[in-house]
Figure 1 (cartoon, one colour):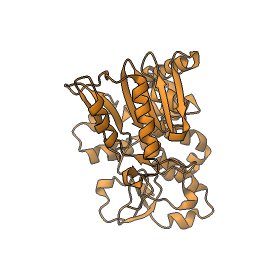
Figure 2 (cartoon, one colour; figure 1 turned 90 degrees about the vertical axis):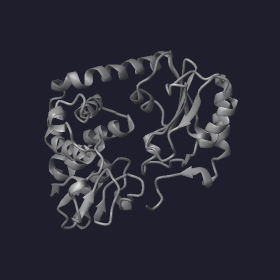
Figure 3 (cartoon, helix red, strand yellow; figure 1 turned 180 degrees about the vertical axis):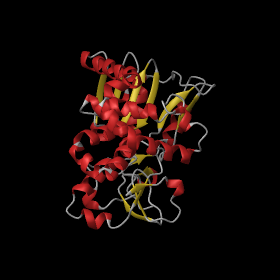
Figure 4 (cartoon, helix red, strand yellow; figure 1 turned 120 degrees about the horizontal axis):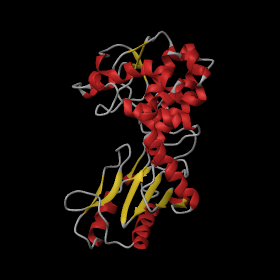
Length: 327
């Protein structure tokens, strides 16, 4: 089996991971919206779906004689999924760690610190501005960049996992931010209040917390962060993909809430929302220069508006979106 960049597939039959299917997709081992991996194989990450396929007694039937695997978007999850499909025997020996890397990359949740460090390292590799492979990535189109990153990580991933300390300069600063955020939560200086009935977590902290500290501390997929009079309401990535481990509430379009908040706002500026089908959309208040700013709305009032809006539209399909619809 070989990896072929998505933009070079043409009409070749292929297996897709971490991306949508098209008319030439024979098998989707992806959790993306509408990808609809075979029900017995489904998992929370594309990597987990690949491992379920590799471990299945029907593996030969699922994979058939297809010799091409591809992906349209690069991520830590995608890198793990593609590498594991191309190196099944090696991958199965490190299944738990590899799934942890994919989960840390996609969902900012982790069990093993090594997985988080590896996810951070891969993210730096993928950033053309700071990557050790800046020269190789420079000047490429978006599709060309994605393909090159997969090619590079097919060789780099095993070394990252085996020699993570050699990459300390790539992960140390961000890992320190995670540990600092976890310490704030443990000490009580930062607090998380949950409202399970609307799948909402409210975080208040003296300084911004790293997502890996937040997402490892709460299962709520709607996260409201409050800091110095600023409000950020975000849908986590888990609500954009097809999750197999637990039921996930559909997303509710927050545009009507934006309109209501704008009417009530007392400070010059604009309430914005990134869009319901954005992978990680954010609702926030920005000043006239478009920068996040403190709202004039009192904290208790804002929280009441958010909770009431989510409750009111909990059963209203007209304003809901979920990744399970056929594409």
